[in-house]
Image (tube, rainbow over the protein chains, first blue to last red):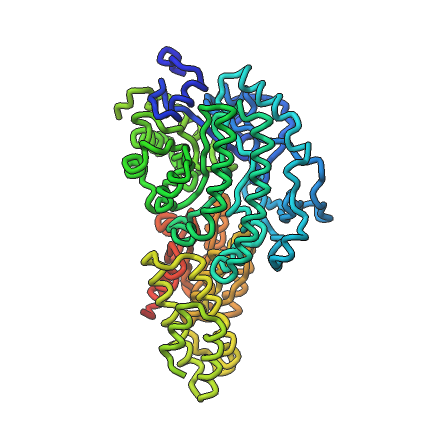
Length: 388
Length: 211
């Protein structure tokens, strides 16, 4: 590591970037699946006993010692688990999440596993059924258990900036519950159901944001408003008018609440929206809805050119992500990873407002060598002034 | 029954009206193949164009596909007994290890609407199953889908098994899915790649020299 050029702590570096000021170096962030995490630790020669608790997407929290050794500036923290146990499955490969969605563990060809949703509980539901559904309880005491203490520890005893998700998605959670095809059809033919479902989910996510911000908001630097995916590889999933009519009111209420409450706890904190895919047509709306940070700037999705996005929205949005997970990280050569990272720094870093990160939870097919090349490229090209 | 009304009803996704018009057409003595090729197919073809123009998105395309499928259900019993009038037979599925099906389902529906006989094997399809069904149905096109980078190797494996079975020259392989590119398609020995469902139809016709 090029320590001689370092003049900021990890958190200071992130806070400056978020504030659209040039830090000493482009900050680095990363989320990772359990398979890739095991590979990375092994590669780094770190023999660490950890009680890993993978999330729905098999993502795990990176241990501060691993984050330090690897060179991350942002650490992703999780929240507590509800005391109320979700429904149990008789099949050892199946499990239910707190929303009642059935998931199945699918073995991957090259080892490890991934979780896939296999049964949406509200597929046949009516508006009336939504009243009787067994919704998760945002006030379950398990959700905040230990959160304040752990976040305070990371904040006080390490240099890392903290990124977390409290309440989750509304639009995306709706299709987890309904099934995607059914939900997309609902948007055209059953707007009453869509409205009722989004309202129900929004209320729960808002309560979750409320209790968790209350518990640990002052330690949070970036609050991720979850995986609200609104793009496919080629297009937005829904049209802008449909977004404005049916989805925006629910998100706007939730985001405004979360931001206001968070800023009361930490006036430097920012809210980040994660939305995969080709989503550039939505950006003016999201800026209008007071989003500070956009993740992940999916390189292979249409209309997501980093130079154009920076020119059009760089004064209003901080960009988080950029490092391609559909080709470069899993399949790219060392030179391709280095060049890709350089390109995103060149495009997005000038003037601050960029946190470099893989665009998705790093999957088990990504060689740890490529993650190290990405990190080294940030060290090589990421010091300000950016002159690439 | 006025054919232009059927075309319009498909474009608008008006399922009850599509069904009513198809039944009415059959009652009036129109051939099932005519109703398909002059009503449902042009309707879905326009939907595909609207999708490419950014006027329709997934919900609207699915809505039209659902209406078209409802109309097609009245025609299928007749089409299947009157011999093979379909353009060609497509065997489609999501590859082994991958459970994602929305993209594959849309391709499947739109191909049916374009007049193909579509045999949809679902998701997480074992490689050998594809080969069996290609034989059994005498398929012209094998269409493979994958969403995850971690399941892309299954696509390659499937094409390998098809090649080893000695039927690669009888069937054209079409691939698609979010991480798939034309370069990858070429590398793994696929005959074609399409980035979305309407283009999959165009590509399939091109490969079979039907366009």
